[in-house]
Length: 317
Image (cartoon, rainbow, N blue to C red):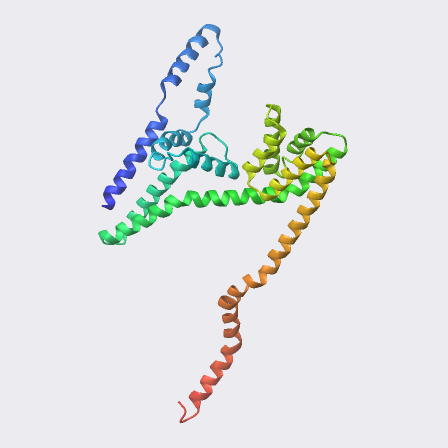
């Protein structure tokens, strides 16, 4: 069974690599046109954009594009709402490409099959029975199928934490920009340009807001899309405050300043809360690892001395 699996894996790998490296028809035609034009004019003309893109793509990307449509068929979502929810989760993690859902769904199948094959090979090397090997394979396939979901959740949490940490500094820059005479749209554009190196996640989101506003989308709708893309509660409260300030005609700079101060206070409180939790979290390693070592160092010599004294006393040992 193990030899059959290894053979199938080797054949599949060789076939995928050969298919990825096989020259495409469009590339052959472009190369022929380039040779003909070089013979006439002495210089090679610029080929089409698609041919240049294909030339720049690596073998790994071609393999991924070839394998993903086949791998995503078993886990393809038929419900449009589920697909929209998946796209929103990927957007929260910072992946907004058209092929992001297909890549994630295809990776679930690929990782599940790969991990199942590895576990099957391990079970065959250990000499497991057929039922035991089947159990190992099912467990490996289940873990591989759920691993991309776990990675996506971790990526979402990481990006939201980055946005949450960069919001106070971003609001300070927006306050300075608004108080210096810029409008809110110009302030958002300035934040997207200036915060690119310090807080790239926040800068990217504000740049998207600027692009949506330039495309004709109303500012309130663009800011609502910002809350949906990030999924951060602080961003949602910020957007609500901006909309209220515009609706009632109050000072936007003052509202942004108050929101920035509130976010800084909340961030400091969260840091203090995490610092207070460290004493409780240290109890487990202290009890399991440090206290036994201290007990051995302190009570070990005394215990050895008592054992030696008892062994030298007649009638006790």
